[in-house]
Image 1 (cartoon, chains in turn cyan, green):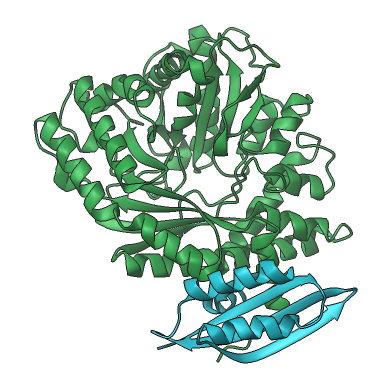
Image 2 (image 1 turned 90 degrees about the horizontal axis):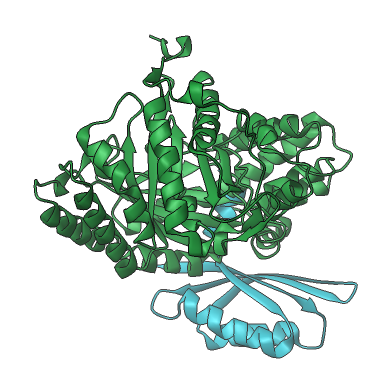
Length: 91
Length: 454
């Protein structure tokens, strides 16, 4: 079974942020399915749809790794299962 | 695949991270009907064993869901069948023993509070009910996590004034027994009219006799989210504002629905209800009072407060009802004083009185909630205040409750700090005009015409 999570990253812009987040995701055996990213008034905002197969990774592992990366590069990174967004905004 | 826009994703993240959207409680209702035996000790042992067996995984499941969805689940709680219906004894000591068993089980499974040390006496007391009420001071003062509620009135039965007087005595006794901690024991006692049997909120949570063997009830809360929306639209007309609140509470409630569905599946329990209540916490921004102030009131208690609250309460229900088919519990905006920092401030500044709170009770959820009164308040003044709140519930066919804290040794204007979700607030003035000849007449105020609906 494939799990899709949504990764959001917010913080001051600097070089290579997307690359470092994507590298961490790859290291956790997960795949970036879609990404959108903007910089406005020096603030970096990124949304990633990330998926992985059961057994290859877990939300907990991904979360821990990304939070560590976020701390290192100055971003607040959140990992949430896609269902919370589907449920909140759609019936 | 469901398409989700970037704006929707960021809105959800902002609600959780900046505006205190959380699941206030995942209460696990457990029937105790199979625990009744004649002797109290085996009953207490059976109750303890059943809670540990059935609720043992609740904390782990709540943690798993919190991790999966990134939404904080603030409390894990258990409610049980009203204990007076389970313990077949007229000895108060038996009930105290059961309270200790409940407390031990709550501690063992790692839950915050356990509700259901309760009796329903709106029409009259059985010997068991009477023994439970007598046991409340020892039960509450001697435990940490047990909460008690007594339903003394209903639209169908009227107000049991004898029970109201007894509960006033109970509050004074608990106040003295927990005087070292600002009489905090009284914060764990609710006196109800029309108590819902599926209420997930403490201290009044219970698992009524009409409920399933075990069920999950979820209380979702996000006053901060609603406040942000209201504050961001200062020019909106009443119709537009109501619409914005409805849209917001729809989204909040959907999160509760998701958590409830998954939790009930993981715990192999019935999905009970989603409580649509907006419940504040002492945290800045997580306040019902601040929503009302964002609507244009300088402070809660200003003229227009009741109208603003009525509109908020109604919009919350309308938005929430669209989001789930499992509504229940109290489902409305709460107005506790000490648990809402801006409400406590309004009371301290003299904008908010018990009488105004009584009016507000008529249009929202619960009633005179978490109100600290002087420790020397008389039994009859307490009873009269409780009776007034019960009358609002009885006549309007709604749930009302009183959670009054006569703080031992405290006078009007003193500040009481209970800590945690109980919060802090000023000691409020109680009208001291005599009422003894009224409240001590004895018996029951008859059921109103509104009760005759068949």
